[in-house]
Image 1 (tube, one colour):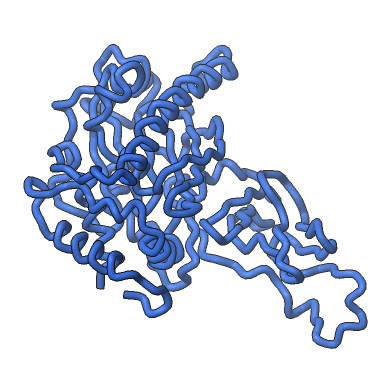
Image 2 (image 1 turned 180 degrees about the vertical axis):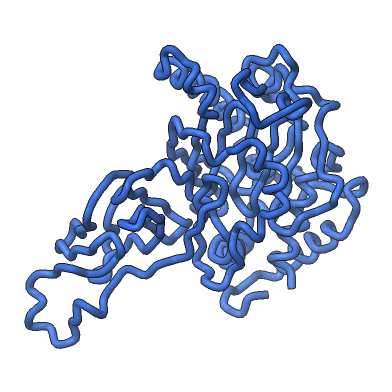
Length: 385
């Protein structure tokens, strides 16, 4: 275990049980020990090894399309600014002033400089300090030596990933096997139609596990995305398990209102015109990539019992271009996905409450929950020495 974080005997026992569970085949596997969801010390280990050490998705690159466009993103306890520089590339840096550690900006916008709202220290869009008044009598002040720390930031098929780990491998290398599946969808060209920030009362893993499995779709989402879901059409990659992600494929019926390729789609052929890809990039980026749209969640844990969620959607360009009233179409799409979110929130927060209960115990997994077991195995690899 990490030498920097204290753990209770209970946490050590939980991690030992997690490692033992991860070694089992799916047919013999259960859900994770409930202390994985309710233990504060387990959560601190996850922040240290997962969210401070892995690639974390911050959204999509078309959210900041122009030079000087920026957006704020909190990588758990580290506020960040992602900004498109003068060279057209996107970089990420600390959203904390180098003076008294005030948060610099919130939200999204366009700027030529970032000015601290506390004492007006000002930085250019590369993070260099360019102005700081009344510092002329301070001997230890050197404007040229002060700048906002940068963190790793890379793009992958239209997604923006950031990491506090300067030594981590490139995201494109880590997700290369997934790219073989997703490239024909040309998701980098999908057009973002909205993003929102939500906060749910649950452990972040409850939400990750809910999104990655389709077992619940015909039940929890019977009025929405589950209505046209073909259970027997669910399939998984025959190549086996992957180190940094998992995914499944599912099929929508021909009569489904969404989820199938538009007639103008020229890249998907045959059965792929009705197939959606549902990846989970560990630890907390989940999305549904359909031939006509995608929607996603980027998780930002706020504690063992609370998670902030960046929630958004994008539309295939040929679909959006075919709309006579684009705003009405976007509003209708968002309203539908909002209902799905409400459905998910009810079950996910209910799962967390069940984990807190004295009689709550993890049960056996279905074959439709293969990705849940792969998530268990990922966590065991990262958390158990």
